[in-house]
Image (cartoon, rainbow, N blue to C red):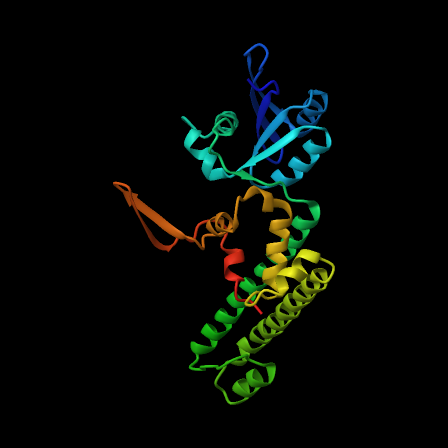
Length: 279
């Protein structure tokens, strides 16, 4: 039997629920604590195996617990969900995490370093700017279309002035549409600045520079791959496992000993998959 007690923790912003079974006595323990009490609880514990559900702040807590000498494991949420027996409460989630951690087939998530998280945070901010720019652009085109103006490509302030002068766009709307055009330009500049920051970081990242030599992978793709693989490459037995994790392996369907591959599964986080052909 494992001599190290496994403590499962359901983390949140302010409330933490822990569940464990003492290996020496078999006694079941369960506690719900504030953040400060949780930190005190883990500081006073002997080195234990601490299991968390991969999610918001899990990587931060994984690094923090590892510095205290605990062995940390993160489990993907889809492997925890089947063990939630009744109502979805914090204490039920903590018990489900503990039960999932005892299964030999569970897939573990590597704890990301602070540097890897920072790089991926830049990608998330850039992606949000892209979505905001797309939304603004779609609304601008839709509003102009309401007045019979069909614009092609990027709309400029000069074009807007010409439409207002010709009476095609109401004067009342001109100022607000002009602000939207300026906002689109600002979002584009911010997006390009983040792209350049990511490219500059690639130059100091040995793995990213190696990946950049692979045909078909651009600067953004190698940055995201490097940030993920630096932390989690050892979690995968081979390249196909990583491909399956990213949803680019075929979905398998089998019965009676016959297994047939289907279309790609598209499982997991789609972000890296969308960058596979970026330049």
